[in-house]
Amino acid sequence: DGSDRREGPLVHMPCGTLDPARHLEVLLGRADEDSTMPGLVELADSGSLVLQEVGSLALDAQTEIVRIMSTGEVSRTSDSTRPALKSVNLRIIATTGRQSELVEANEALLPELHARLETLEIAVPPLRSRTGDLPELVTFFTAKAARRHGHDIKGISDDALELLESYEWPGNVRQLRAIIEHAVLTANQRKGRSITHDDLPTLGREPNQGTTGDRDVLEGSFEEIERAALT
Image 1: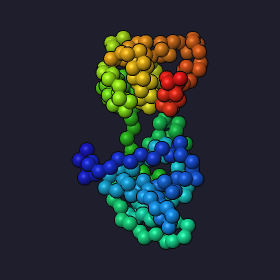
Image 2 (image 1 turned 90 degrees about the vertical axis):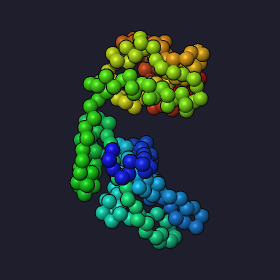
Image 3 (image 1 turned 60 degrees about the horizontal axis):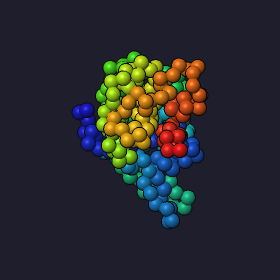
Image 4 (image 1 turned 180 degrees about the vertical axis):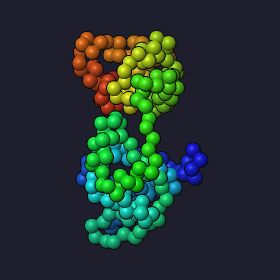
């Protein structure tokens, strides 16, 4: 990345999981007598703001993003005062997970915002078509999960990696991240030092085998996976 912003902050906004009624305040922050906090736009100044699942972004927040991209200025929300404008310099990146979501996002976006976001479009192939990236991704997510939980889990066995490489990955990289984090928790419970085939139980079953509950958990959010692993 040759951008001047490569050393700046990288801030994510999960548009699809946040209450749309809070999108504007989360982006802009607040400036009241009793509550003063910066929004994600200010936190991303000199860096990048990633709008995840951008098609879910509320219309009032879309309007503000267009204004910020046009003027380079942001103003916090307030019920009682007129907050001062602050100059910001940031890159805005919008993402969607699947081709169908891209179509829906394009239909949900204001034309002005869509036009500005189209400056550069990068299509990332789904994980199932680039399984050669799996070893590096697994190493990265394993190390990250181990650090997060304070577990001494390093690496993955050959048979476990083969199982991951044979999977279709309907949930793409986010599903891989969640499953690796689940596997790190499971490996630590059995006092292991690396992820094995036994730490990936539902991936070894055909869709019509086993309990649907386990499969649903592993293909859900990380919070669901972690809850299942700890109970």
